[in-house]
Image (cartoon, rainbow, N blue to C red):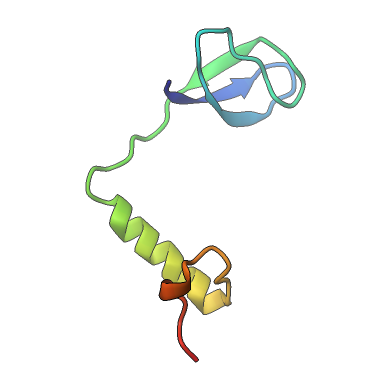
Length: 75
């Protein structure tokens, strides 16, 4: 079940949607006139770097609620 980016022609919203067997509908207005957009694929081997970068930024901003207890900085 892939995730696709869509643009709703009815309300103008852009969103990601997990596509199953049924026809996709806009979660904002329920419209069915959707345009499937091209989305950038995840670069192989970059996920760990992206996660580390996001965690460093969260640490700088003081957001530690999504970390495991062992990953939180010790004070």
